[in-house]
Amino acid sequence: MPHILITNDDGYQAPALLALARALRPLGQVTVFAPDHNWSAAGHTKTMHKPLRVTQSSLPDGTPLYITTGTPSDCVGLAMLGIIPQPLDMVVSGINQGSNMGHDITYSGTVAAAMEAAVYGLPAIAASQDEKEDQKGDLDFAANIVAELARYLLGGGWTPNSLLNVNFPALPPHQVRGIQVTRLGKRIYRDVLIKRLDPKGRPYYWIGGDPPAGEPEEGTDIGALALGYVSVTPLNLDMTDEAQLAKLRQWGLQWKMS
Ligand code: MN
Image 1 (cartoon, protein in one colour):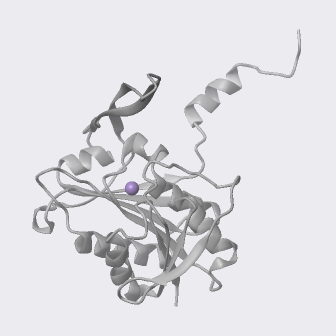
Image 2 (spheres, rainbow, N blue to C red; image 1 turned 120 degrees about the vertical axis):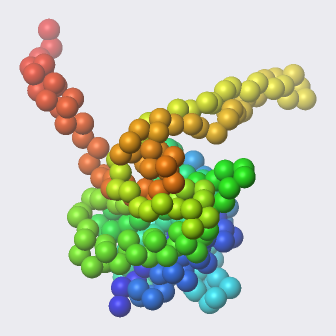
Image 3 (cartoon, helix red, strand yellow; image 1 turned 90 degrees about the vertical axis):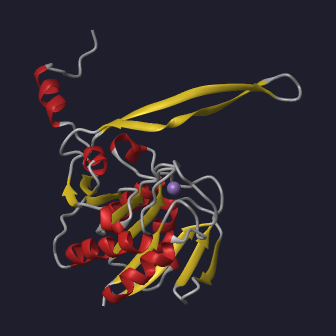
């Protein structure tokens, strides 16, 4: 029976953990390992300069829950390095509150935890639920689709170094049009620098602004959600740029001081 680890970057109190545990339990043994607070946009962080604490608890349905002071990717590392005695077969990260598409994947703690799993040689899924002010998705609907994808991965449909990045549109289930297999799209960030003064008159800064927009190009994750589809994007740890590699080889670089 496969052993599936669930983690996230929203923290151990996020309701999506319970939805995922419920949906994944028919596939095997389920353990949750989550951070003690929200780490959204923490990226792929390994804690190396301070000690990590881990406490044991359980979800309301009895699923074993480990809570750590570490980051989302630390959760996977701690689990793999021996905190969880039973070997793991897969990691599912999420379901994040807010989409992680295009360049978001470089900031996302949700995706980072799945990347950490791939580093350890495990299949992994990062799942995120898009949010809009007036429209909401359904966590159980999303969790069931994640479980369906997990079933494929565990059944041999996985290649090493790869992970799936799944995004759900902010729509009720009956309005979701289907699933599209996509590539990463292009985010448009609308960050602005907000400067304020502390009580001593010294400046401090916030990175503020509106939520990111994106180019809804066909075939991309952003394009799929714009049309009301669930997006499934395969990512790979090998970030080598093949086009630039070919160019670099033509530069004739060599080790020569002159
Ligand atoms: Mn988050």
